[in-house]
Image (cartoon, rainbow, N blue to C red; front, side):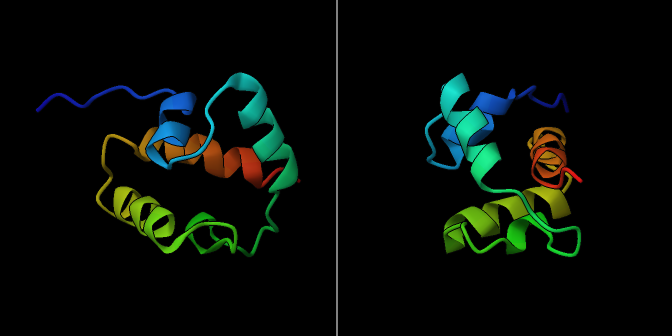
Length: 77
């Protein structure tokens, strides 16, 4: 089965967030996470967004790669 390729802005749209380049930069600047906080456990997600992130990661879904990118972007040290 061929996996779909998603880009960063697709993930933001899937999560129901503004997905322009400026909106993504602003989101990442405003939502950095400490190393001990897992991405789906961040307090700023709605329950549905957090569940989508958890399920996609757990199932290694076609969204997993771009979710990894988001995780790295928010866990800057």
